[in-house]
Image (cartoon, rainbow, N blue to C red; front, side, top):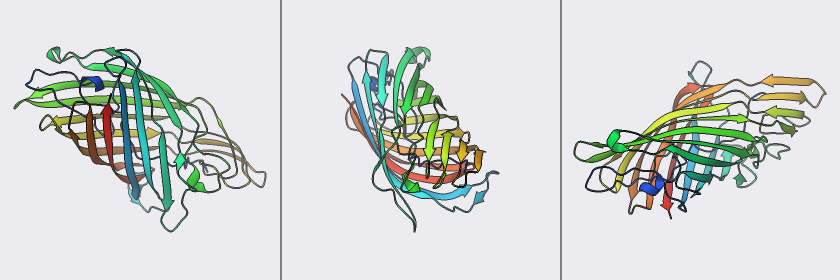
Length: 324
């Protein structure tokens, strides 16, 4: 015990990148570049009051190996595969403040093993975003946003019928992020958009767990658990081939502290463990196609290629981006 076994779907950006409503800034060029936003990078607040953005992602994730404490490749003893749907809903309350939520539904299975007992709804994050600095490309000033929110413990985490059902943490989690977005015109009048971000998450409450749980406990256990802190930082580049076609690339670094568990097992023995921390490097190439300023699609793959105490995961995915 001591390792949070909760099943986490593939990483996705919290985007809505089309046109100025999605946070893109106009350039001194013959046309306005259209974007969907890259796969991983979070976007800032929408730029026009009353705008609504909707972006469903669909992904398949499969573990391809395991990176041990020294970052070396090791055997993958038990990896879960899944298909998931992650959908971003974002609404602009004002020209600078937006609210968003990102529900996730997934179905997982192990090779030669059990599956989840059905499609599973994960923990539900709700965030408020504020763009406190507007971009001015002519003066090389980026758009800067901050968002804060709470992830509600809606996913299954305790008294599980199957270990694969553990998709939640059981804890209310504080979420904080800072985002930067800037656009540039390259030779040949091609647009380049840069995003830089950093995120942080910390559990606000402790989960009460019993029997089989997402924290790796088994039948007869009773106690509490608390997920470790988590953070991510990264950058993305989006290069406009034409007004409609864009090449995108994300590079991100994730880290997580181990979960702490306190309680008694089926024999009444005291259990107090703290899991190992983990970290990984992820890359995500993709291609975007936008057939209007408000509608587009993106397809690509996220891949964990380095790290420690974590699985190598490959996740092809696509998303449809729309702004109303």
